[in-house]
Amino acid sequence: MPRLTLPPQVINQDQAPLHQHRRLAILRRTLSDDSLPLRARVAAALVLLYAQPVTRIVRLTVDDVIDDGATLTVRLGDPPSPLPEPVADLLRAYVQSRQHLPYASSRSSQWLFPGRQPGQPMNPVSLQAHLRMIGVPPQRGRTSAIRQLVLQAPAPVIAKALGYHDKTATRLVTEAGGTWNRYAPGDHGRCPGRTLILRAEGRFNRRMAETDIDLGVVTAPSGVLVLGMASWIDYWPQLGRPLSERARAAASVGGGHGHDWMCEMVSVRAASDRPLMVRAGTAASPFDGGPAIAVLEIDLGLPWAGTAGDEPIILGDLPVDRCGMVLGDALALDSWTGDGHPSTDGLADVAYWGGYAEAAHLQFGGDLILRHGGQVRGWLDLPLDDAKKLGDALNDWKGDEQGRGVMVAVDEHTDFHRFNRASWTHPLQIGAIEVADCSVLGINWDSGDHSMRHRGERRFGQVYPVTLQPGPTGQTTMRWTIPPYEPGHHGAE
Image 1: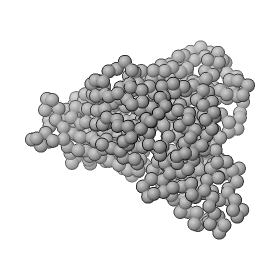
Image 2: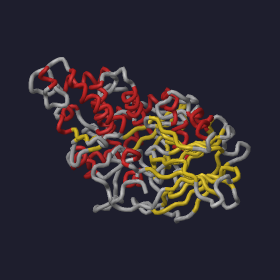
Image 3: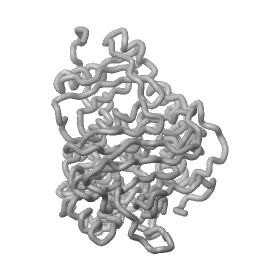
């Protein structure tokens, strides 16, 4: 690797955006750590997920929180934004806890975050201090969140939903290197109340036709195969029992669906002595016309033991996780290292992109890296300390007189990142990796397609059936079927 000349480090307190993996790690801790103050956790979620400034958060009223018993929304813009389940539960608990505030004026206040002075909201400086006390940098977290969001959806959509000015959102798109030049105005069948918490950028390869695709193989030496949500595979042990224990229990009765908090999976018995073939049937994405997975099939290597009429056996249903799905051996997945885990090999990748990337390249260098049909600059397989120092230097670098720089990601080598990296050049964003000596497949989703079709996930009924049925040679096949897109229809088929 060529020698790098790093400029002197300039520390700007709470200014440079957080790396995206760091923002998500802070968010996970905030949502799961019950020892943290409830008020600060709720405010942190609004900052890290919805890019809300503290000055706007303290002006929210109890009337801005709309709870119909099934869905909880917050009026941040137009229309109100629905909150995903863990955040909704936090906000419900916080609203109830206001009845126990020490000041009578606070208990009766219409402000969601009441201050000590009667009739006044909480001072934003005080709320900033509360956020920093639990390890949330409010300005950096908000900047990181909004820069990621404007790469995922058109600037007018983000601006309207989150209360930003159109010009601000459009400027952030340019700075972050997004264009959304494929976005066609008009009715895309978007449900106006859906969440805008979207995943990192990705694009399908338009050259692929609607067809069946061989995706490779997985192995299941434990005899139990799991299809689960990549965001939460590593969280099962924190909920009481390891993934493999739950999966074995379900497989022992013919297979089934597991769901605990945000974690979901289906598990089934599979041959332990041979590779299991995986295929996908594709259909045109409503987002850009490229291929999207419509059917995922796995040959389980076991004879069909269902009914004589070949009726499918329903295992359950699964949402499409915005961070992808994982298919692999139940016992191997107990060792899965997710986003936010330390590097497993002491290495990391650094990438940067945005409107000032070429100017940054003149200063820092960096190779061109192909990623989901696009290109970023960066370095692969750097020693972790070197990667972090380089990421800090890129974040501190100011590209113009207004201090605008580039988007930066420092990705430590976890299983989650390894499968994402393996998917960068696959037309369906499939990443094949080894986990605990087992072949595992990670299945990414294009963020545009996910935004239009699946972003409500289970909370909005966007779940799709997983079944067992006989294959063409009499073997058992597991099939996950995602029905054709119907504009205006947002629930499960």
